[in-house]
Image 1 (tube, rainbow, N blue to C red):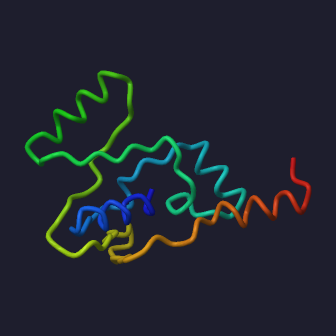
Image 2: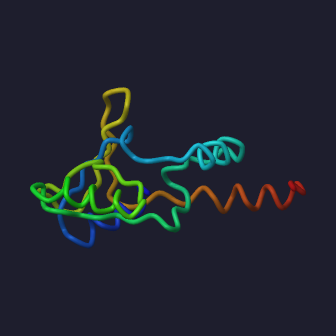
Length: 118
């Protein structure tokens, strides 16, 4: 998810600010990532849709997605800037990213294969 948000910030040339606590994470993904020792917010996120909407239309977009059975959440905003991601952390700190971090999934997958996980 965070890698996609960095890419969004770079592509639009504005900063993106999100609250990590608002990013959706299913219990199954949280459990799998904990087992593998992987940060779920930097790992693969196929099927994730990032939508930007004008502030006055955000609630309508959330409603329409909900009507179609699509879970969605308002997680942040696009701000003036130069393509940086700002992440408000649950502890009150702020992390900034100019580039995506390496995806932790592949080293974890390689380890699981090497160790014969089933």
